[in-house]
Length: 198
Ligand SMILES: Cc1cc2nc3c(=O)[nH]c(=O)nc-3n(C[C@H](O)[C@H](O)[C@H](O)COP(=O)(O)O)c2cc1C
Image 1 (cartoon, helix red, strand yellow):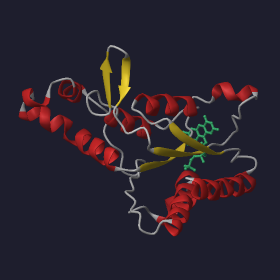
Image 2: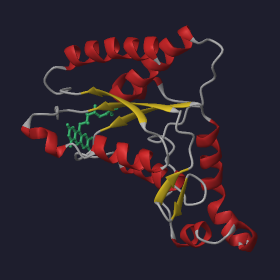
Image 3: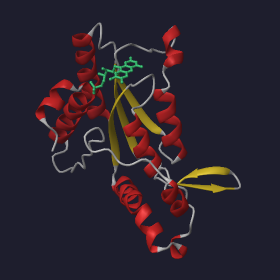
């Protein structure tokens, strides 16, 4: 369970929670699987994980099966979802390492992407939509000099497009250092747009 204090401090949690609340009002029959990577980080991949990921399942030893068990569960959870909502702070122009660790666990050859003669092939159903709500102290709007420092949106687009998800919407809750209230208001308006049009 997420501590209330963290929800009220954290902009990415607060705004993604606002989205889920608005979505559930519009779609009360939908269920939400919630994962807080900040409070409950998943491990980084390690040598046994790599050995297991590149060993065909029938040939894995019990140790290799154990090493890849959590990743398999995370992939299963990811593939079972109909759509995705990520709340992602910007850390040093990119995603937090906790989110990167999660991506390393779910971007798996043979499970979420394949390599064939044409190159990479995403194995996730391409009709699935993704919403990414970022929280940023500064602003990195396209067309401004600061845009080149935004390594977050290009990375997220590239890695999820690799596994097949191309319909990705971003809501950047930016300028939180200098214009917090205005930014929160804009984000909440953007949420209503997404709920109405998804
Ligand atoms: C370790 C760290 C690194 C950060 N790096 C950046 C940055 O590169 N650019 C930026 O605009 N804001 C940066 N920030 C500000 C956060 O993006 C901002 O406070 C955001 O609201 C954090 O998300 P949260 O409120 O959900 O915790 C950084 C904050 C922390 C704690």
